[in-house]
Image 1 (spheres, rainbow, N blue to C red):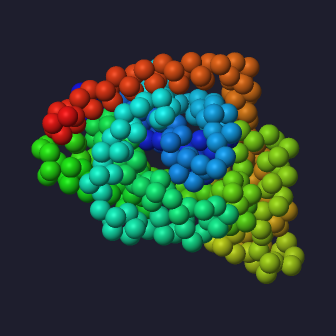
Image 2 (image 1 turned 30 degrees about the vertical axis):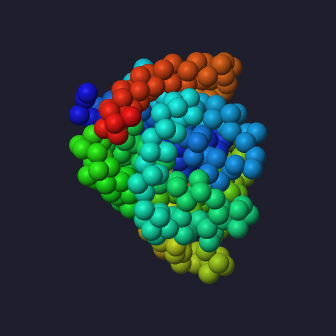
Length: 325
């Protein structure tokens, strides 16, 4: 086995936005050239909160994979697969749940945060509480030495490391303790300054049409203290400037122009929209081409599922032997 295996995944919620791109996919496309990458459509994970209506999961999975391909994820370099098609994920999840202390799960910061924030769904279910156990099973099943995370996600990975140590303490050195592959991720705000999220209705898609990009940029929140274009601006708290930092190579110059009252918000937004349209145009063209043959995405998932299943089956043989099954 290579010493550079990586596992990462996303829940299938449909088309992806720029937060997904700068937060994960840009990095996925880069590391696939130097690591043995397994990229997973986490449809079991989708059930932890969307169990009441599963009607869109399959279509959302295809849309998401098409976006992966759009930004350069290459099935010849990475294994792209559906979590639910590899039955060993569920089997290892069951085994790990037997040794997972409730206190560990109940103290999970993400669990507490989402219970508080997501009021539209009943999340008081075993599957949602056990989300970190399923995540650990995903990683450990492939003996992934590396998991790409930003610094803000280190706590999520630590549970997988803890449950690995607990398993190995009971049954012997079978599972590999995963390490963080720290990656630089740009924080992408939404149109309203909150975190970009489809559930907030404040996102811009990776392959957004030019008309939609222009329309959405126009709605961006701007400095209420600026009455005239010549008034002093405050770029550090401006969502428009936050996007200039992502898309404008001359963002430092723009910062000074804003502070000096040399450019008004309307013109600043117009230039930002032009930059963003130029950035997304290749993605729009690539996605439109991929949509002509959506069956190709299904084929990629099927082939990836076979490769992933072969690796997962070998790991489960070792686990069953350690358990004396």
